[in-house]
Every structure is written in C-alpha cells, then in structure tokens.
Image (cartoon, rainbow, N blue to C red; front, side, top):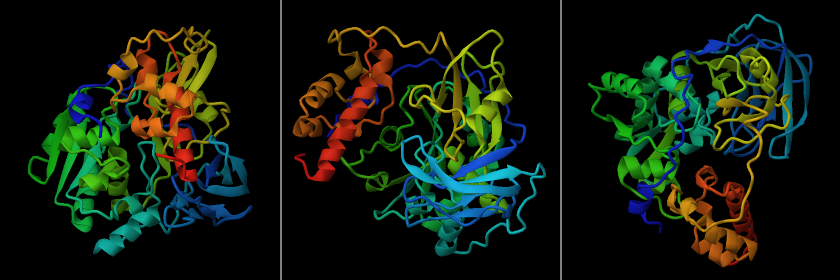
Length: 440
C-alpha cells in the first residue's frame, strides 16, 4: 500500500489561471451540422436507432445502450439525419456516428418529459434512459456506478476542478446549485446512502459559501473545503482527503464505502429529473494564450472543435500552434479540429505557436522532484528503469497502475523530460501483460 500520510501532502502547485471563473456560460451560434458519436463513454458503443433522412429533435434518442456498461445517446439539435457512418475516435478505434444537418429551430422532442420516479428501480431506469455518464472526463455510465456491489455510506461529489484554466464546474455550482442539491437528494433517497460530502478546493470561496447556504438545513449534506493543490480531484485522493479512507489496491471507490460523482454530473441528473432533458449540451471552457475571447460556451454535443474555437476567436496576429481538449495538464493535443465534442468535453485550450513549442529535453539529474510532487506517491524514475527493462514484476511493486496521468511529474521536472508520457506507456504495458497472464 502507498503511504497515505505522505501522499496527502503531495501534489503540484499549478498556476491558478482561471480567467473565465466569472464568465457566465453563453450559447454558441448553432452549427450547420453536428456529428454525434455512438461512443462517448466507457463500455460498449451505443447502437444507432436512426437512418439517413430521419427527422430528429432536441432530446430524441438516437442511440441505444449497447450493453450493461454503455449509455444512451440523444440528439443535441433538431434537423435531418444526413448520414450514419463509421468514424475514427481519438483512441484510434472506429465507431458509428450520426451526422445531423440542423434546421435552426431547436425544436424539443415531444417525448422529453420529466420521468416518474417512485423507487430505486424506477430511479435507476431513469438514470439509464437519460444516458448520463461521468462528465468529469471518465465517462463511466452513471446508472452502473449507482449499483455498487459493496455497501456504501457516502456519496462524494467531486467539485474540486483543479485543472488549469477550466471553470465550467465552477459556473455549474454558481448557477445551478438547486439542480445539484436535487440530484444529490435523489441519489441519497433512492440508492439508500445516508450522507453526502461535496469536496471543493478552497480557491473557490463563492462556490463554498453558496453551497453551504443551500445545505445549511440539510445535515446529511456536508460541504468540505479542500487544499488548493493540483491532483485533489483524482478519485483516490478525493476519498482520502474527504473521508480519510484508502481504496484497496485495484479496488473501486465502493470498496472504501463511497460513490464518487462529478458536480456537473449530479447537476445534470437534477435537471433531468425536473425536465426530462438528457445531456445534449455541455458548458465548455475555451481559453489559452491564443484565444481572443476566453469564455464558457454552451455547446451542443457533436459540434466540431473548429466551430467552438471560431465562436471564441483567435487573437489577431497570433498563430494557433496547438489545441488541447480538456485541461492543460491532462488533456490530449488535438490532431483534427473537425473532431466532435462529446458529453465529456469540458474545455478547449488554444495555445499559440510560441506556447506550443516543445521544451529542450535534458538528461535526468536525479533530483527526485517527480517523486516528491506525485500526488499518488509514485516513483517515475524507478518506473522508467523497470519499463525500459520490461520488468513486469517490478512495475507491479512500484504500483504503476495507480498513475492517472495527471502530468505533475512532467510539470515539475527541471530537465523537461516527458515523464508523464513514459508513465502512461509503462502503465499500459504493465496492464497489458497482466491481462495476458504475466507475472504481477
């Protein structure tokens, strides 16, 4: 086991560049078309329910969950299906996509109605029907998460939003507090969980004050301020900081008596229970040194990255060097700007050609900073050596599978070595060998 007392004190102090923290979300101009992927979640892709020429509306179900671990998909626009065709995902795999030409009307499907929920079974059915997944980036189907095999005594809401630049969760807390509380209370009531803890980094005092005020007469819900240290939002760390518990190696949060939900996920659940509208749009933070108008935009799911970036604009005289999807620390660089947004897209970071230049990489000086600042207490230098030797047993002893690619090791490395990428490769190699039956 990792030393949790040591781990609690670690984590990189990244810049608090939250220029859009006060930027209330505004709808972006409706795009001419959207491409809605049938795989926007962990698990089996959804099965397309529509064909070319079909008319759809906002909230129309266009994809049926393809298995127990899967999620329904809904149209984010009204218009006509132009194509149902394969599309290559960012991970290299192929899945079906539904291309819809918008009609500009945004007519809501008449079938969109608040669900009737009376017990646990009808509640879980409603959650599954709305296609809700983890909106913090993981994309795990929520209805599956709410059926843990282990006894759970705490619903833990991840409202830390520790990623550089991102502020969409902050705006969700400030503008949709009632939806957050409604979603939390429904989970507590129907799943049978006695209490909830909302973990918020202490650099968001307005959010803490508002949610404290909203829950002052609700003793089962606690708002817990957290240290402003990057990495706090990782599930294992959040559980440790909020509950003082450690998830067993290889276990799920439920093994520590907790279910973890992102704050925008639980807010979306609250909205669905009140209106019947599934997740068809996302608040996306658009920022970066190349962005002309940093802001939070309400974006229909399936809108191309290019359309979103055009809505924010490029600074005059600046050359766009790179776009990062998600947060600057963990998000991947975007190769193709025609790629569509999904339910889990939380940010698009526009970097100038100057900012996007790769740093000069130097030899490791064995300073130990990557070890000192790893929020999971891992040892990237030792992992690198074990990976170079393809030593599966040592990688297991070093707990490489605990790495969640937060980027802290690369961020603090004075030699500017690609530590995070190496850790990702080592973890993938280790898990692949274990799957094949290699030695742990």
